[in-house]
Image (cartoon, rainbow, N blue to C red):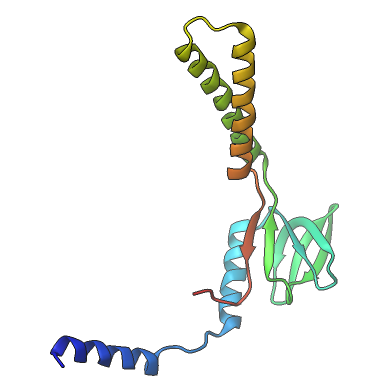
Length: 158
């Protein structure tokens, strides 16, 4: 065996012997909850609680055991023990981006029709612009106007 092979096998053995075989999921979960609190406090969130009810409200605080949420201007406490994912509904800025892409699709269809045919009739311009707007809307909706899924579980994915 040459030196490169010996070095490779030695590092492989050490990685298996000294590698971390399990991650403390409580530490990972606490870090994710702290980051979630810092980034999304004051925003509308949605999750499914342990009774399979969908809960939606404004996140006010996260403590050791509960989400503190404002629902209809009253504070409510929900345990986050069995909650692995939290969803953020789309906001108005996402809708504006989607509408802008739709308008851009319509304008692109109009310009492409004028370039392809120097004197198109009005029916063709309207049809192509409408088709471009509809396609732009679907692209914008699928790309930007969707619910964000945030993982707050303690599991690591490799």
